Length: 212
Image (cartoon, rainbow, N blue to C red):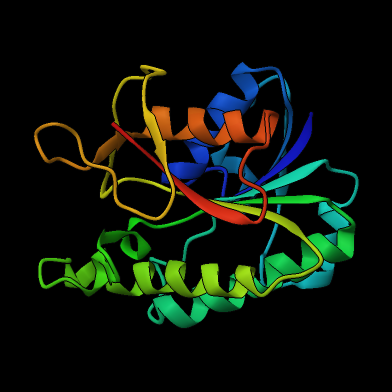
């Protein structure tokens, strides 16, 4: 499958890239600096700015799906920058005629109790609130989208480097926890779940989550 990955050198994007290439997909890696991406078979590195909608659309044209690992956490105005970027990505994907958008979501908008989202609990880290709120509002933006087949995959509360086990659970709106009460998923298993969804779509126009 010919796919484009936005943010392919980032924390999550690099894992998505590795998993997609391992499964034989042809990947266009859209990054701010292509020099940071090691040369690899099946990967075409392209410089891209998510805020340059027309240019982004031109580079996305001809792909079967777009995976977005775009993040604004390095910006001063994390929330504002992220939402502006997400709206540009959505518009560019539609403009390019790409039929599917798969988006890296956040655990903050998952429920820890009926009607209570993780981001709204006292223990949620203040330093991650901008990113989490951006992910929550991005989900609302997509839920209003009528012309695009989108999917959001939210990780567990702790998304960390670790082994690829291929053994995990999927959920919908509730934060997943293991038998010890931990909510976690390895970066490699998160990527495996995302590429599973790419290959065998099961969550069209909805958000789902993955965890142990």
